[in-house]
Image (cartoon, rainbow, N blue to C red; front, top):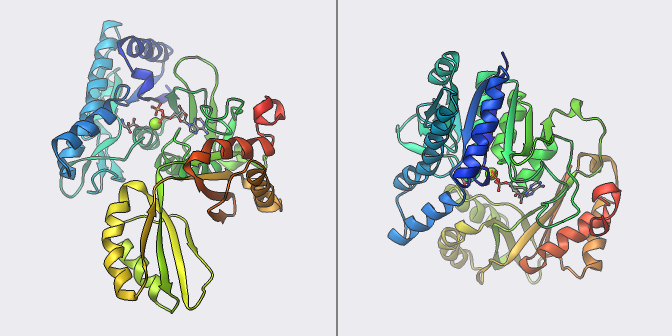
Length: 413
Ligand code: ADP
Ligand code: ASP
Ligand code: MG
């Protein structure tokens, strides 16, 4: 008997009718003779609504309580879905993340799964049940408190469970047909990829392609889980994420990702002497603030500007750390720009194809988009642009590399 893990995202279970359709699909997979484990997200915008409600009750809600609150969204979905299956004559049992043995570290809001003990899941499966697990949550090994895995975390619950159960496939059901060469909501002619390697999907996800949470792809790669991203509204094949060896051909470019969740912070007129940057960045690290791109301008008169990007939600905290330090080291001050976006071109083939960055910059310039920062890895080129320019930038880069359907530039496809 094959073990199939299916994850249904928020839109897919957005209302009762959609929930019923999901139950039909699960029944079908069960009746086809598979053992089925289902991971569900909260219905529609429930998680956003809970976050808003918490913010209205308290300026800084305690992380522990916020996590308990947020996990309730997934619990509503899991129990309703179990009821829908019962109504169809399919035995089903739902479990919270903690009951399903999802063990995490103690970092509220972005906990990492450190172990999975799926005893109860396995037992319920062996008893002929469809098992439904609430996504995005676990329990801390140390504190025994309930934790959440970060936004989009149900993807990670699903892939991690698939790994620990030795599932044949992990199906991620969502509101688009698969992984596209760019967000299909921004580039209408974006092309659906039949396959993408873990490596490239990791880079796309890390650069903002929210269709899969980054950690889910890491889990998939580390435990060799085949991931099939597909639409919950059709039976068409989606995109397979797997090892490089499975890829039919090596495309030079896999896609364009964008991210509007970061801000840019500049420490102005920093004295250009050894040890200053180390001091600034180590104090940010001590506060667990994740830094992304860093740019240091050419020094003039012994002073230089240092800019970096960081999650927008962390700017207040970063300012709090850096303002007194800027004073201490004799810098002029700290400036924050929240209206930025990052646009990244990703592709394993760019390692061996010179000129990719130049072509990207040329397209941006022709579209009148100013580049504020640049960073690269062996399989990625990223730029920071003004937030207002993000759609133009993504469309221009997508078009110049002919990523649209039929190989036509996206606008014409
Ligand atoms: P779910 O609720 O099912 O987890 P998400 O909203 O988290 O769904 O992820 C699906 C969304 O990801 C799509 O609606 C799409 O707008 C967005 N997205 C961004 N980049 C891509 C991409 N390259 N391919 C497909 N979808 C993308
Ligand atoms: N409900 C959570 C969120 O909206 C987790 C998920 O859907 O994956 O981020
Ligand atoms: Mg998601």
